[in-house]
Amino acid sequence: MADVDILVVGAGPVGLTAAAELRRHGVDCRIVDRLAVPEPYAKAIGIVPRTMEVWDAMGLVRRVLDEAVPHLGQLVYIDGKPRPPVELSLPPEFPYPFATLPQYATERLLAEHLASFGTQVERSTELRSLQPHPDGVEAVLAHADGRTERLRARYVVGCDGAHSVVRKAAGLTFEGDAFPEQYMIGDVEVDWELPAGYSMRAVNLDANGEVDDMLVCIPMPGVRRYWLSMLRPRAEAEGVDGSNASEDAGLGSGGERGLNLEQIQAVLDRLSPEVTTASTLRWSSTFRTSHRLVDRYRNGRLLVAGDAAHIHPPIGGQGLNTGVQDAYNLAWKLALVVRGVASDDLLETYHAERHPIAREVVDRTVRHARNVRKAGSGPLNNGADAEMMLRRQAQLLVAYPDSPLTQSQADGAPDAGPAPGDRAPDCRGLQSELAAYPRRLFDLLRTPRHVLLLFAGPEHASGDGAARLEACAVEAHRAAHGLLDAYLVTAADVPRDARPVGLRPPLVRDAAGEFQDVYAPRDGEAILIRPDGYLSGRFHPATPERLAAHLGRTFA
Figure 1 (cartoon, rainbow, N blue to C red):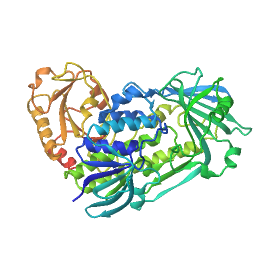
Figure 2 (cartoon, rainbow, N blue to C red):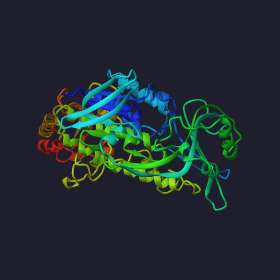
Figure 3 (cartoon, rainbow, N blue to C red):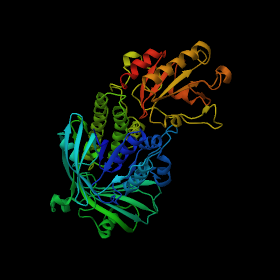
Figure 4 (cartoon, helix red, strand yellow):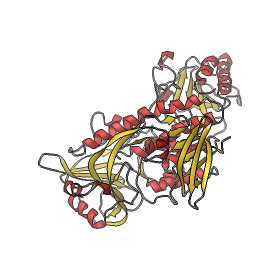
């Protein structure tokens, strides 16, 4: 018998997300980290809109909104001359913008959220070895007091970074390479008058039109506080042993040789669009970026997420966000398996869904990094495809159309609205029988269960049509072992008294018409949404048999 269901190794944002989601799904877990205290460095700071949506579903977003600051766009300067700014503005149907939050604050909020479930990070606890068995994994943990603990877990999730012990124990490869460029980063305050909320990118070009000097400044919470990234001058980088730069470890931990204020000021003197003085240096580091991708996200009972599975240039803040969404994808599946309502095969969909996403992110950031010395290049540029690039950067285009859990296109794709495998969009103006205020669809999705939306137009709002949809809800609830919430969504023009009050499933009225505009549902259609906020399938006409058969892909 296992001592614990899940052992999570590593208490960065990814490990904390995995542990908190496992606990929210009702699964026991332990989370260990070799560090005695969390690192106090800003490190990864970019938060994309999709991660904000994830934190909304987790019940964490209010705290994030109180502490993060908006990232409104980027000011661009080439050889001291301004170029058109890049605006990071999304259409109003997306509830959250781009934001920045220091990694130590993200970890604190996640750790406090995890503690609300009664689970604390076990610090000064290092994973020494793992031995998989058919029915579990034996882990050897070393504690700060010299004690060695042998622990049996049903599964181990490695969120332990680029040098992951879990990945090595699982025998997974981590192929890739390092870039020759070295970077310097610093966390400082500057006294310029540039617009608040905007990052700044300034480059100087050499005689060949290539970038030979670069500065990127990203706003952080605080008064004129910025995260600075600087391209290390060629002459300086070539004259220094690369061992002084952090490699394969993201943005360094602060232990590498950092910068002083004089060095940072020299870069600002060369590249800042206005005269400014740097002060209050909190942290600095030098690093060389790498790109690597694991061959598989899972080997038996050992799984990896975040930097243990993929590392890449820190362009556009994709690393932390991709890792958090790895954990979010995995946790609900692990929970179903541990609770005995899904087979172990469900975990194969973790690799099937997340590995292609990580490969796309790695490939995209590598392309941008290779263009770093080209004038005006960057992860976002204004142009004909700017909005699509922005949505990709926001990770709002992540989808799983080819997943084994997604309804086949052969079953009939919808003419409009999100397709199976797509992210479930939010919509506003929903009215419930017991709420005098309008609700969002995301309010209904803030649950660790599947959600079934049954759309009732004129033909299905009452009588036999409503009875058929009610039968679909009953059978779906049974097929999902009770881990499903169903709602009957009626069109705005359906009379309020078409269906008696108080019946199940509960009634939600699309009073503002946004649900119909966004989802384009057909009368009598069922839309099934997974716990991680992606459409599993759309069924028209909805029948109990079709729903039960589809849920059988997930549930035992």
